Picture 1 (spheres, one colour):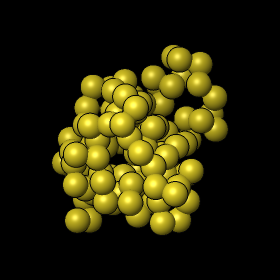
Picture 2 (cartoon, rainbow, N blue to C red):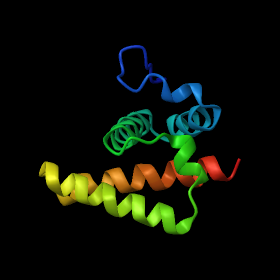
Picture 3 (tube, rainbow, N blue to C red):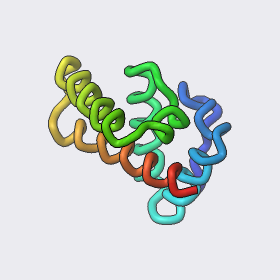
Amino acid sequence: MRQTFERSPYRHLPEDQAVLGWVTEGQRGSPALAGGRFRRLGNACAALKTTPAELARMDERQAVSFLRQLVGECEARGITGVTTKGYVMAVKSCGASTTSR
């Protein structure tokens, strides 16, 4: 089953073709996992005021800095380690997907 984004606060993200491709690829494997990663990516971008396109343009040093900020933001919100790991995995998987296009 395909994810729909009409009611999502991150419904604008699939307008970026690279993100749409990332979501589509993820849905082939597991629609539930793809939906969760989509929400986490949107939440991470919103919390740190960036976009997936900006993430894709980051060099390695900037990406590491972003992930450290993300972990710090998760800790400040009281988010558990397992959930924080999910945020990091979502950002990393989207970054790998969008930069390979």
